[in-house]
Image (tube, rainbow, N blue to C red; front, side, top):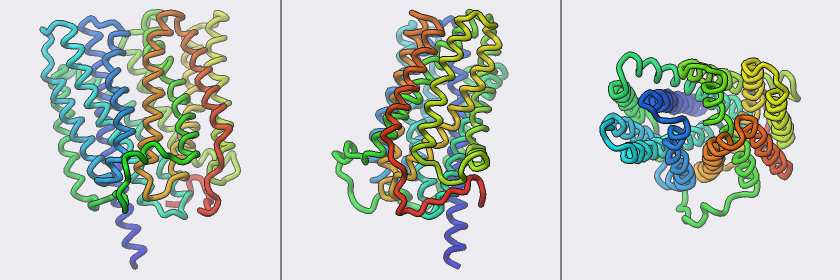
Amino acid sequence: MNHTADSGANLRNYAVVTLAYWGFTITDGALRMLVLLYFNQIGYTPLQIAFLFLFYEIFGIVTNFLGGWVGSQLGLKVTLYSGIGLQVFSLFMLSWLNTDWVQWLAVLYVMVAQAFSGIAKDLTKMSSKSAIRLVVPQDAQSSLFKWVAILTGSKNALKGIGFFVGSALLSLFGFVNALLIMAGALFLIMFTGLLLPKGMGKIKKKVKFSQLFSKSEEINILSAARFFLFGSRDVWFVVGLPVFLREVLGWSFYQVGGFLATWVIGYGIVQFFAPNLMKKFGSGRAPTAKNIQFWTFALTAVPCVIALALQSGLPANIVMISGLMLFGVVFAFNSAVHSYLVLAFTDDDKVALNVGFYYMANSGGRLAGTVLSGLVYQLFGLVGCLWTSMIFVLGAGLVSLKLPNPNPSKDIVWKGGEGD
């Protein structure tokens, strides 16, 4: 009876966390597209637009570092809904932007607002993924990989939907009204927090601040690999690719936004089905270090092939569309296995600390990729970005060679996407 009650409570908590995460994710994708479209419309260059997101990434790093410690002290419920609340504030703050301000003041104002959004995004992400570890039993690693894949995969699909939502709201209601509509919808989602238990994810004993620096070897290695993995994506995806599609291939901004949205949705769908696909074509067991090594080194070849194809003079439209599809599929498997392993290496009472530290490395990779994307594209074009991406993926693969398998004492048995 107690087991049934616990299962029902866990399912409810999972649903509440997922709903909150989904609501936030749509606004996160929509806000990015709103900023991109609006500031392009008023004359900002692509590189200037990229720098509007600089604080978004920097404060994401700080948040992931401190957020895990805060979550372990106050509970994941507090950090989850604090993140959503900060996003509401960020949306309201952006709605107060005055286009008559001098450009440097407007840029600074948007960067500060984006800093709050970056804090919100990583608080919400860290809290959501940590919470999933707490509602899945230690011996149910099959369900853990499946539930993490659902949460992560759906997040990417919904972020792509958010791109469409942002474009539609901007065209229908304008920049300010679009921001206010999103802020109002997200504010309503905050009330779902009443359904979650108090102290969720709160550590049983106090953790010294210095313990943030003393992670397990597995988490350190996985975090380093994550840094290079996400840097490899953003070093060509953030600035280089959109500018190339617009200036070299002559796509409209709406075509660029729609294409990138479709790519993100497709990437999320692949990640969603990763457990089933790996079970069908693999051993059927839970992912191990060999899985992440295989998928990382497989990814190394993709930017290399795209760069060589562009340099050889093949039709750029075909090369970019097919290359991005291949990159998205292989990258999605990498990300799905990464998201599973960080939780498989983590004990319940350290989940917020370890996941926060891990996603700090994720944000660090995104920051490095964002800055290098603009710099390398300006100096060497998209081909230079792709070769830099290959170097980053190779770095992730070499680091992952030191990664051990999850502790066998936890009786990890993976059955892919089977089960509830």
